[in-house]
Length: 109
Picture 1 (cartoon, rainbow, N blue to C red):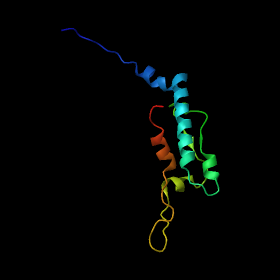
Picture 2 (cartoon, rainbow, N blue to C red; picture 1 turned 90 degrees about the vertical axis):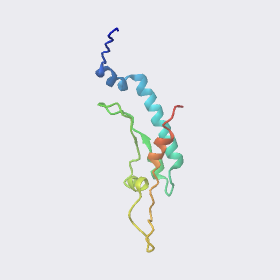
Picture 3 (spheres, rainbow, N blue to C red; picture 1 turned 180 degrees about the vertical axis):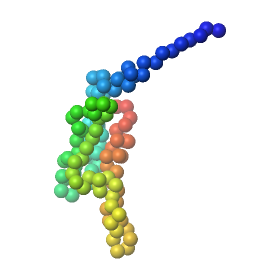
């Protein structure tokens, strides 16, 4: 029987995410998430929807691409509040706009 030895260059594999082609693909996917999130965003004043964007610079350590909605109430749009009406129903239900947009835009395109 022949012995086969495989050496895996884990540093090279970890560095693939920083390759310009991979970063371009991730930026395009981030833009797709932004598009879906803006289409699904609830609109009262329009400020929340208007602020949804892809952060231009990826994380320098991991290469991660981030999508953000930097208004102070974005967390309440995403996850809702515990505030209830007098019948015990939550007033601000979670909308999961960014989470759902990430799921929806996650496939190949």
